[in-house]
Image 1 (tube, rainbow, N blue to C red):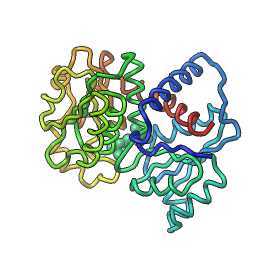
Image 2 (cartoon, protein in one colour):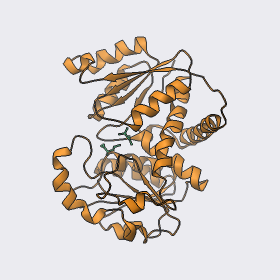
Image 3 (cartoon, rainbow, N blue to C red):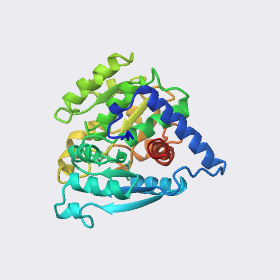
Length: 309
Ligand code: CP
Ligand code: NVA
C-alpha cells in the first residue's frame, strides 16, 4: 500500500490542496453542528517533539481524539532513545510497527525527510527550521473561509525569511496566490526555495516577489502576514534581530498602506510590541489571528483524515 506524507506543501498538487480545504471545511462543520465523526477509531498518532509547542501539540492531540483515535506525546530529547543516539532510520522502522501515523516537530528538515523515507506510515511535518506546512495550509484555509476564493489574491509576508516564509512560497505558488515578501538584507528567504517555488508559480499564473521596503510590499494587498523575528533555536540572536527588524513591524501605519479590507494573520506565538503591535493583532476588523489558531485543529483533522483513514 502506498503511504502519503505531508513534509512540504510542494509535494501536494493544487487539486489535493483544494480537496484538503473542502475536507477541513466539512469536518469543521461537523464539529460546529455536533455531528459525530470518528473515522480514525482504533488508530494512533505518534507526536515527536524536539521543540516547544502550544497550538501544534494541542490541535493534533485533540484532533486525533475527536476523530476517534489516540495520540501519544513523545519528547525526542528527554524520553525517546533518539535523545541517546538511536538513529532516525531505526526509530522510523520501529514506530511504523506500532503506530498509524507520525507527526514530528524538530530542527533539521533532513531528519523529517529521513523519517518519511524509512517509515511505512504517513509522516506529517509539524515544523522544521526550513518549513511549517500545516500552518500555511491553515492560513490559506482561513483566507478561503473569509474570502471564498484564494486564487489571484495578494499576500505580503513581512519579516524574517524563515520556515513560515518558505512554506508561504510553496503555499502561494500551489494555490495561485500572489506573494510579496519583505525582509531586511541578510535575512531573505532561501534562494533555492524561492527559485523552485517561482517555477511552480509560473505555471499557475501567480507571482512571487521579494522586497526590502515593507511599505512598498504591502501596497493594496489582501492579506498581511508576520511571524517572530527570532525563531525557536535563535533565542541568542533575539536582541540583535530586534534592532535590525524594527522597520518591519506590522503596525497601524503599515496596515494603512494595504487594501482597506486587508486581513492580518500571525502564526503565533506573537511577540507583541515587536513584529506586531497590540492594536493590529487585536483589531477585530482586520485580524483573524485567533480564528487562524483555531483552524489549526480543523485543517489538521482534514490532513489526519486524508492520510490515515
Ligand atoms: N503556530 C504554531 O505552530 O504554534 P506552536 O509553536 O504553539 O505549535
Ligand atoms: N518561525 C517560528 C514559527 C513558530 C510557529 C519558529 O520556528 O519558532
